[in-house]
Image (cartoon, rainbow over all chains, first blue to last red; front, top):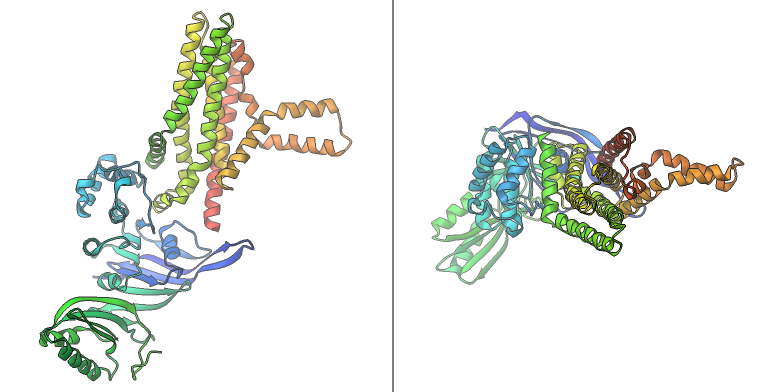
Length: 319
Length: 263
């Protein structure tokens, strides 16, 4: 249950800039950004490199100060920096316990909590191993665990899925969504729309230091807020079928029938190695398409979201 | 307070892991060994040679340690972004810098303690009737000088990169040893005519009021002649070092915070 009335973090009109280069030219990182994260909410920040996602998270977590604007936090924050580096001379258990103690926990309490978290992230057997021997994915999981050490109210994660394999991503998604529950909140950045789609209640799309679009998850469908039009998603679905050419033709016909009013547009259809790889774009859910394909005895081999696409007009042209 | 202790302990552990302790101990041990060897050349003056060489070797080792580790310890945390884990836990910059400095002090204390022990033992072996009180008094001053140089290094590192901070700290140290000399020159020249040399000397003397006076900690004469320092003088120097060190570390923490907010 999301309670947006109880904001765990409220940022108003944040602006941040740095001076760089020989002439100390001012470079704007954030420009008049306001956001609010409510209890029980998972918010994902999406955007290109340099869009201002990391700067925003750094300001919200207290690592960086904005030039203008205010941040109001009600509760504690757990933060995972981008490309984190940890004290390599410590083992995983000692590292987590150390950060727990820095957060004000007792030694025994911190060690107990650290053991529990290592178990949750599947690194129980590596508790006494030095962090210098950990792989990138393992370090990423330790990073998320350190952010959870002091049981924060708001978790701020900068690309938590970075370096994780498919299994690791799935486990991380389960861990994070389970952790948030109804009392906590999560704000994360990601480059993968698929991760955001699975986890987030709200997706904020950033560009050039501003929040450009806001999408709200309502029952698996993301729609824009206020005056924003529905955003279309670009997805790739891979099917296998006994008669690929027949299925391909029927699929084209089906999608054609769904093109007006705007729902689905076929972008690409490629038959190769016993599978058909289809890229579709549309504001509608995939449910009807998937149901239809299942009815046609096609097996879904894979499906993932490629990202937010440009708005699709009624004629099916991209603007 | 728990956070301060934990960060200081972690800093110390990390240096231990990096073998800083062993390398500096071996370096100091080597100097002491050489001083004993040197003393054996002149058996009538062996105790003086050991006293003088031991004193110099401990100073070089501890001051080098304070300077090199002091300028880089906070920057290291910034570069590898471990500082972010602390700041997000509401550990302020000042607290963090102070904790790191406590870690540095612990390393200086342990390293210095072991070296002083070796020095005192060799002194006792060579002149059993001699008092070790003077050795201990001077040793504490050496530790205080290293602590002050560490604080100077932290301060300079808060406004510059480590290589420049190391140079500035070394210059501050040299300058801090020449203030009496400058005063003497100023008095001997008896200028006051507003000439370039007069203005320059006056300027340097004024700067001397801002920079720490490292020369107060140097007691070579007392070491060579096995003298015991007056408690008032000794205590006053320690208090001076303490106040200056705390002020510089505090200022360094504040500067780091200012810089991070201006980034």
